[in-house]
Image (tube, rainbow, N blue to C red; front, side, top):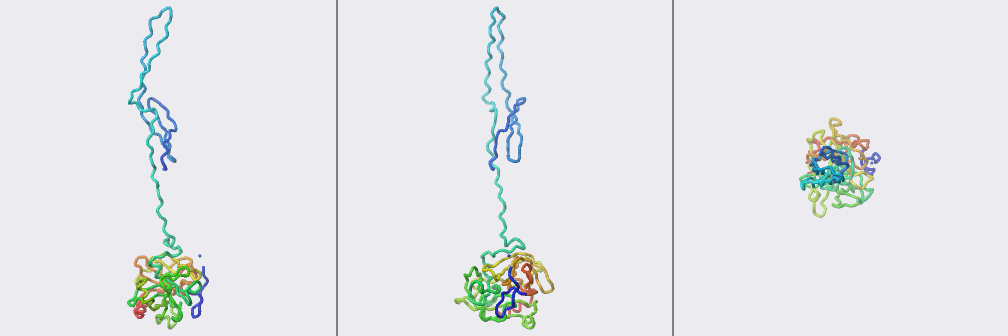
Length: 323
């Protein structure tokens, strides 16, 4: 089943899911043969470094007087002072500051391949929005769409299984938590390919929607539009966007796509439930839209794998016809 929510005129969905300063401390000092060994302590790395010291001066004895009936005490030698240039008995090095290592910044969750997270608010994500069947607000959105570059600057792209006519449908780009920061745009016309109209061909499960101007501006003039890509590699890396029916925020996952069959592209991204149908696959290398959630099994029968009908000349011709 597809990933639009249950609405009148829409297909039912499957259910929603998702240094330190180096401590220069004297440990011990042992003088042996004029060499003093100083034990320094560095956390995790003890080491021994020899420090040469000058040998202390040897005192010169004073000769004893000739023996006499009354012995005289031996004169006490006067010690010779150490040269002024002699080093101190213990030398302490200047403190050494160990470099502070910083871990590289973590990648945002949505940039980790195969991880789904709330989409950041940026120029690309603002072109993605929710389709509403009633007033803009929680519980009324049923599918996802995105602004596509076109000559008339008034077109959006979604899955064909999301809707069959424009009546009562609005598109809210950049929708978050009940707010429509870039306005609400009324859908005026739905364009689908012949194969879909005449038999629901899953290989043509894409639709172009025209929207009316808002305050005298076309939607692409306000937000820009993603170019359409029809020659992307089957193994392109793509950012996948969607609005889950039970959430008021868009989600995003990045992963490498693969070929499901002749005319179907696949991507493995967790927790893309009902409401995400029509969400765009945006090629990370080119910024082109190379698919929308739909096609095989109307987008997939599990929340963790999504599909898209292949974008080739058919979708290019549909976009040209919509103008």
